[in-house]
Image (cartoon, rainbow, N blue to C red; front, side, top):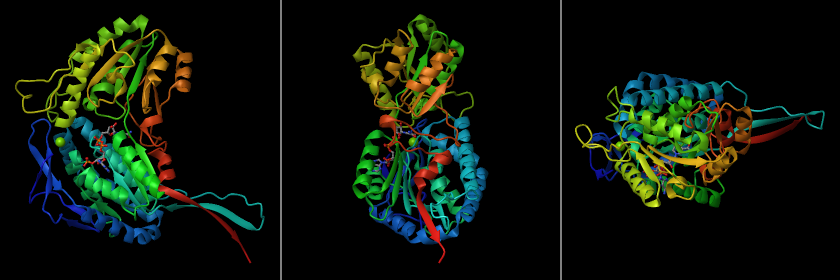
Length: 488
Ligand code: NAP
Ligand code: MG
C-alpha cells in the first residue's frame, strides 16, 4: 500500500456526491498475484470524514421518517444493481485480495441475498403489543433507529461483511458512514457504487476511504456518531470498544479466531479430511472462521495425519483468476510475511513441519505472494502457533488422549469464534455442543461457513458478545421505545 496521486482513483461518496480528497493523495491497491497496481482510492483526511458524518447526521430525520417499507424497497433496488455487476465485482475482489473467482462470485451472490433478506425486513413487524396492567391502556414496543452508524470492515470479505452491516443498519432507519479496509477498498468502492446508483436520499449512505489511523480513528472518535460496528483484528477492536464505551455509544465487535476441529476415534476420516482442508486452506486460510488447530484422538492420529497430508499435496496454488487453481496467494505482503514468520516460529518452538510452509518460486509464482499450505505435527497447547491467530494456510496438529482432553485443548485459547467436531457418536456431539466455548458450533462440517439468516458471532476474545446477521442484527441496529397510551 503506497500513497501517490492518481487521476483515475475512486472517489469518496459523501452526501450523494462523488468527491476527491483535497490533498489529491490516493492509496494504491496491489494485486497479490502479480504485485501490480489494480486500482486506486482516496487517501482521505479527517475533514473528508467529518463531512461524511455531518451529511449522515443531517439525513437522520428524513431517513427515519421514510418508513421501514420504503427503506426496504431501496435495498431491493441495490440488490438488483449488485446482481448486474456481480461478474465485475468478483473479478475485482480476486484481483485485489487473491480469493479464487468461484469464491469471489459466491461471496458477491451472498451479498445480494443479504440485501434481499434485509429488504424484506421492510415489511416485517417493528414491535410487539404487551398487555398493560391498566385495562384501559395500550402498551407496545416500537423499534427506533440509533442515528448515525459507523461501519469499519476488514479486507477478507470485502463485499459480504460490509453488506451484512450496512443493509440492516439502513433498513432499520440509520444513516451510515462506511470506512472499508484499505487492502480491499477498490472492491468496496464498487459496492458503494451500487448503493449510490440505487438513489438513497442525500447523506443516508456515505463512503470514505483512507487509513485506519486517520479515517477509522476519526470515525470512532466523532461526537456525532451514535453507534459503531467493527469487524477486524482484536487489537483494533479493543481500541474501538474503549472509545465507544468512554462516550457511551453502542458498539459491536467481531474479531479474530483460533478455530479448532476435533477429530474423534469414530469420525468418518474422509469427511473430516475434506472439511478440515476446506476450512483451513480456502481463501488461503484468511477467514476469521478458518480452521487452524486440528485436535485428533490418539487412536486415529497417524491415519488422519497421513490422509490429511496426502490430500493437501493435491492442492493447486496459483493466480486465482485461473480456473484450475484451488488456492490463491496471500492477500498482501503483510499476510505473506506473517505466514512465513509463524512457520519459522513453529520450527523454533519445536513443532515438526510435515508439509509445505515454504514460499513458492518459479514461473507464475515469482511475482506474487504464493506459499504452500503448512501442516505442523507435534504441536502443543502452549506454543504461539497454537495460541495466536495466524490468518494463513496453516494447520497445527495436536494429539489428545480422549474427547475430554480434546475439549480442554479446544477451549484453551482466548478466542471463541467457531469450532468443529467430526464424530458419529451422539454422546460426543451433545458433550461438544455443551462444553465448547464458541459462537458457531459445527458438527461434521467445516469451521468456516455461515448462513445469512442465522446469528453470527463469537464468544470470549472473538466478539463483543453481540450477534450479526439474521434477526439478531435488529438488536444492534435499533433501540426499543416502550410506549404506553391512555385515552382521556
Ligand atoms: P484490522 O487491521 O483490524 O483492520 C480492520 C479495519 O479497521 C480496517 O478497515 C482498518 O483500516 C481499520 N483500522 C485500522 N486501525 C484503526 C484504528 N486505529 N481505528 C479505527 N479503525 C482502524 O483487520 P484486518 O487485517 O483488515 O482483518 C483481519 C482480521 O479481521 C482478523 O483478525 C480476522 O479474524 C478478523 N475478522 C473477523 C471476522 C469476524 O466476523 N469475527 C470476520 C472477518 C475478519 P485499514 O485497512 O486502513 O488499516
Ligand atoms: Mg491487495
